[in-house]
Image 1: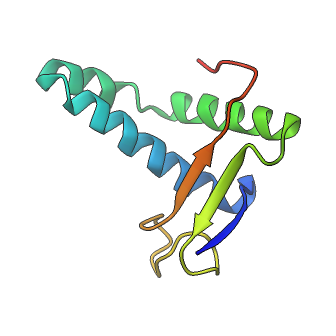
Image 2: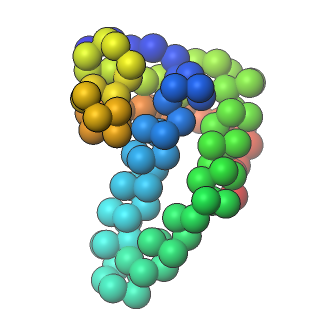
Length: 98
């Protein structure tokens, strides 16, 4: 597994896929109403705000998001490029995103 800094040009879609999966899992913990609420917030606007926040954090600390790429090629870990085995970790960021 290769570890490398997040690159917004090639990793944004995979990071959003991980974030959306997290939101859906959190929603599923609270039943149908909570799942519907969490699913409903996964809009293009929310995606843009989230990725803007990640970019803001990286401008201040370029190592705050690390990609663990399983195959060492493009960070996706699969031939489809859909982020199937891509993972990211985040250290603390000084600004809270909304």
